[in-house]
Image 1 (cartoon, one colour):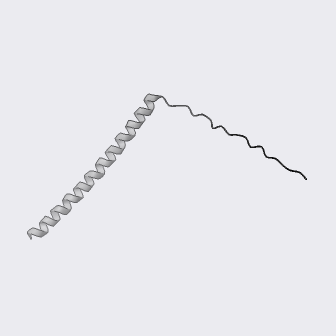
Image 2: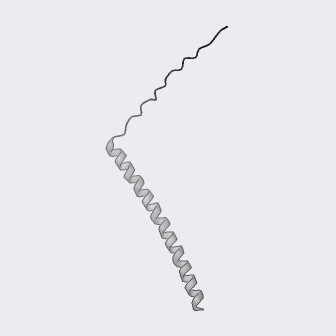
Image 3: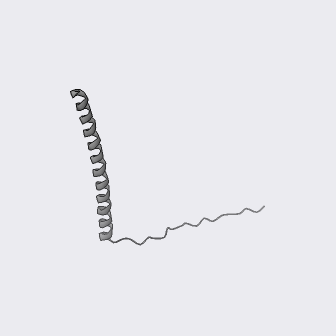
Length: 63
């Protein structure tokens, strides 16, 4: 009776070259700026919709 024994090799992940500190920080701030601009745009749209609804309600009350 043949018993096959599998020997599992431990796989060590290849090390990725580390980015330098300055590049990582610049990238983080760049992403933060982009997210901020997106959120400001969304908030502006919501404020405009709210103002338009308020104006419509006021117009209906004055009629």
